[in-house]
Length: 265
Image (cartoon, rainbow, N blue to C red; front, side, top):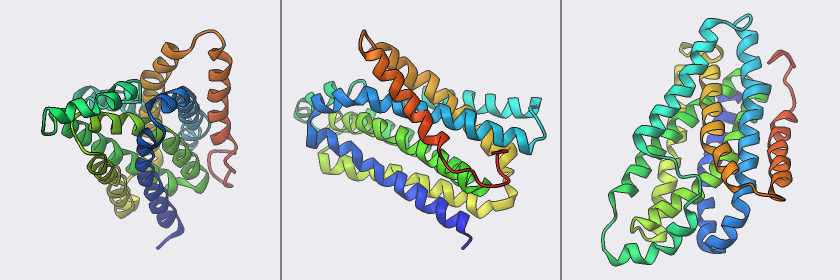
């Protein structure tokens, strides 16, 4: 197995395991999780934006011989595609309602059964994770620098998302054990997405299609989902800390060692 394939599979496996981070809602309590969530969201937004502008777009521009209409179309496709998925399957659960979901957990159980929103949430997350797995695997096929930067950005984005996802499942009437198990199985969809891309190999035009598609998708998630949450939560003294967290996220992916011959670094 080529090193790029092995690294891609290990990366998506690690990202899938992060689904258990949602269990911190149970261990720490919703109030403590809510206190750190804005900084995690800011860190995630910075990492996604940093990966888009410092790694993915430069890589795509280099391999396509400059910025072109085709490249712009793929980026727009990523933006619109992620919007369509989110709007259609309602997976906008980045933690803003974690506290309410956790407090209402017992109340939901009193009504018996599991509400439909839980299955819709899991279905949406499964599709989301399959796409993430494809994008991460495609990044590793381009090179270790793009692969590592994309893995870091996706992993940081996954943690605050899992807080919200677990809260939704608990609120819908699932037991904690069942919620954690099903959430992990949904997250493991990333492995399936990675296997598809790695199996197709050269049949997928990674630099011309998947990389700009990933750039557009991550740009949408950062600007449409994460930044609006930060704007709602920032007030007074919170602004400097939020900016620092954003810059820290950008720095994390900016400091990924460059691989000779990739991205012009």
